[in-house]
Length: 296
Image (cartoon, rainbow, N blue to C red; front, side, top):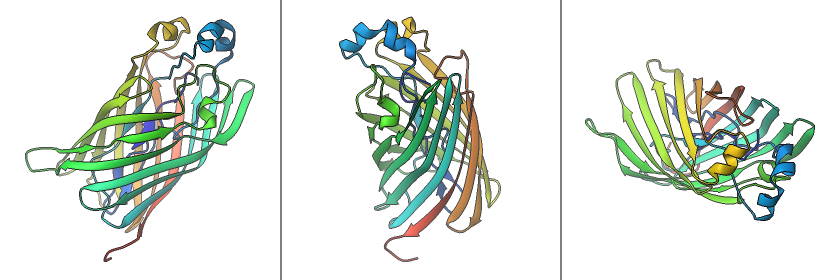
């Protein structure tokens, strides 16, 4: 599962989104943003909401996630190493190195994980620290048929890194859960997959990926995502921040040989701009497969 949008109430994702873009020979995650450290809370929070901070009020910026319903081949570990840079109105977010792992246990069950190191800057404040990490299980409930889409469950445990919550009096809890459903339908030359769910930090989200599979080595795609906060809406409004957000990104994966591919993508937020909005984001990386057991 990949994250899209920034993680905390400051200028993610998400994160992460890695999130699979399936080329002819392997799954290639393409992330809208890093997995993703966020910038420390902007200084106005330190001055205007100190009372709320003492009450342990916790808020997040709207983020979303995306993934397909595919399970990696049993015994095959997909490894993606990538670099991500995100520019927001008051700073920037750089994630490198970042790693995404996906392993198929059998044809119906797979496990995924991600971790990164982040460098974030908000105005004059800077932090270099571990980014967010995650562990997820993907369960294929119904495989795709000729007349019906595939359905998968993809529950995830999210652990926010210091780059997301350090020096942030309103930071959400470090450990959170994502509870999504994934739908996928393939056609002759393209594939559509969509994820919708709830993040226990108080966010509902949905995302849809349009993937063109007309060529054997090149796979372009477009990702559209949206999210909305469900908690602390008055506080969010008082801070002048958006309760919801929409992001769009475009990318391409190029297979170099069976089991090895490179990918690149770029995206931005749409609509009203606040301190969490992505002005632009660029991600590129390498993905490869390693067989751990079973026949080649």
